Length: 296
Ligand code: PHE
Ligand code: CO
Image (cartoon, rainbow, N blue to C red):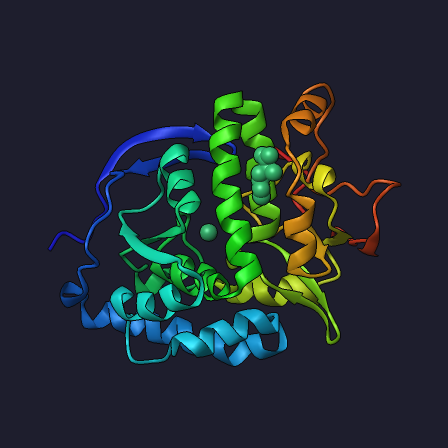
């Protein structure tokens, strides 16, 4: 079987110029994974399993346990869907890779989470530029067992359709919310700050950096602040936003965003490394090692 995803077009997004793949869902081609593919899963799983008890939030760690992820190679989506469906009514669907925004939102709004069926190569354990199975599955799916987070993701999908209809600026504001919560969010716990963002828990380097480094800012979550903050796709984050709990996230995003989009459209966006007077600052970053140029 052809293991190269079929690239159909390219699209300019807030995340840069990205390949957009075929939009249909596929059957997970489980029988055609190579032994190398399974070993890549096992290696990535082993590394994160050893690291994350001290870094990830308990809801994420519990999700990993409940799915029974392990070193037995790439999980079968059908098995995971048994657990997921019973818990929160979500379902994983296999896709070729990144999807056009409307297609992605439609999946989320219907409690379907698209997971890239292919896994990275052994020389890409630490970095690859587009989401693969390990990121999508290990990073995103455990929290879909949490009822509040599961509802937030569905509400985000519905909000995405609305933002898409309003226009590109609204969509960018909403994409920043996804970036700073679903992908790169931190959460306050009795044990200190912990990770819930999928982009962090699926990366060994950023798991450590996001919690232990003194370089980035760590700032209390504020909806408009987040929706107005640019982000970098080419480095570890310069700012992380910290929620108190998933209820805070769900409640803050409940109101209609239409007036927020209108207000943000009239002002300047905040750059990725900036700290504002109005911020609730957990950590003012030293900015050590930050790139001084680029779109931030
Ligand atoms: N309340 C948002 C809106 O009116 C929808 C939304 C919910 C967006 C949750 C993101 C997350 O658009
Ligand atoms: Co992701």
